[in-house]
Length: 287
Image (cartoon, rainbow, N blue to C red; front, side, top):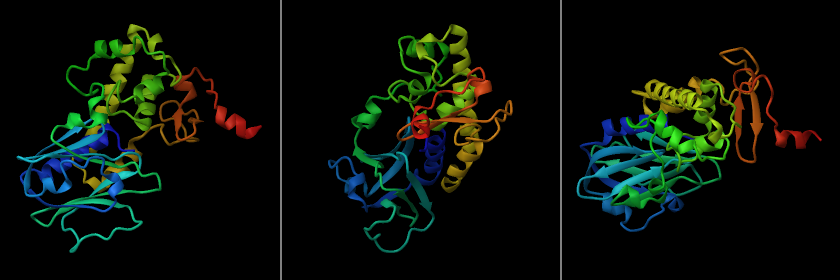
């Protein structure tokens, strides 16, 4: 799933390629992605793009005098830029194409989604706060006012494990499964540690890891074309998705805990005092 760093890079890429250009056609291919019906998609047509913004993992394309196109790429969605879109309308079918946006220059982008779980979402709204997912977002961890004190206030009553707390978009916006693993590894903290149990020093350590991990990922992605962002994300991850590989810090083997629809990765030496975490799903499979 694209997370804060990739969406931030997409925002910058789209701002460079969209702002100042007119939207001439918005073509829905998979109607299921459209989550609003008023204003219609056609209300975007004929309007110039004035800005592209990010809200957590949401992209927000603003137009002059028209509505905004807001999208959430979900787990398997992506944006594919084309300097020249194909002639003629796209054909509805079973392919990954969900929505096409065309500019007066002939360029534009496609929103696509792989797999069978269709969660890509598109909204046409006058105010991004009309999108429920944006309205309930927590603070952005890269905002200037997101200091260690604010993080402490967010976590002080959290009786959840750190992994779950970091992924909660209503608590902190933009962090998902991959970067929560990376942040906890950088902070040398167990993903199962209770959020409310952190000492002031531990909160400061987590805050530094959170800001540094995300900032470095944004910097690695900045300036890349949209098509290269997925590969950049994967290459920059140190523990997430690297089960069985050596930890780049200590050399211990990276372990995994599996859940029904996801998994987490961690280093026992760096994060849990050398003790493997209980993986109840794998334990059941081995019985």
